[in-house]
Length: 199
Ligand SMILES: [Zn+2]
Image (tube, rainbow, N blue to C red; front, side, top):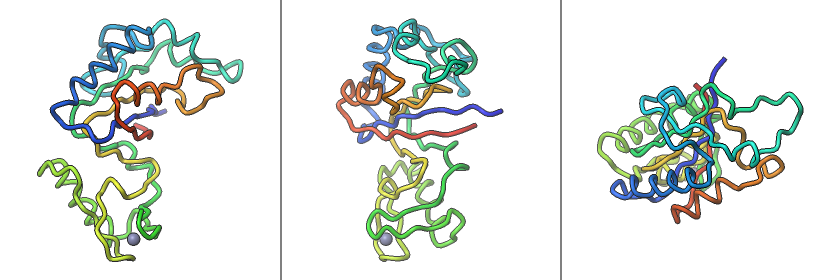
């Protein structure tokens, strides 16, 4: 059985402001008891661990059926903070192909016309530190930023992200009393990408 995560990439963050914005979110979440105040290395499947759900979560989340697992009760359930170039690497095995944001053409994930240039763009993002490496659309013959290509799950390509390990969908207003996505948007003052992955 694998572990799921919901992830929030924060858009248009400069590398030098990532840590400050991350800390703002962490501070507010600790204050509102959404997360515990200390890092727990076993709360996330990453080297840096995560912040486990805080005491206010059971009152902010309504179970949708009787035997629903309470994600806040244990296991891998932390909020992991990624203050670095972030690509949703565990979304990659799940993704359903590329859609051009210009002409809406769809390309299979194994289409050589797009996957090879995609790997090159990925290298530009990580190795050459290019924020918006272009990816050429074979259909409409134009370059688009790698961030503008549509995939499900979304790949991120941000300088700041929060991963919520095994938390339930945050865009479900029937179960959440708090809009965590909107809260992160407000605290950081930046737009967000909401996505997911599985390890
Ligand atoms: Zn196109």
